[in-house]
Image (cartoon, rainbow, N blue to C red):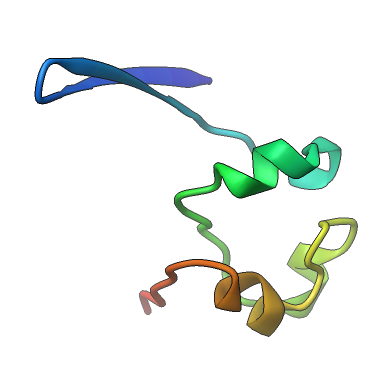
Length: 64
């Protein structure tokens, strides 16, 4: 799913996916948010399959 949002007159596209296992290296450079339950099995097949490594590559937040 792609959502477009206008920020200061510029349209930005956000792509939502539930299967990042097919992401290219460029796709990973463009990740702005990851929503997961922090169960290690949820990250199998991802480029960064360890949540600690994944969240060290960019911003992250944990919501309970």
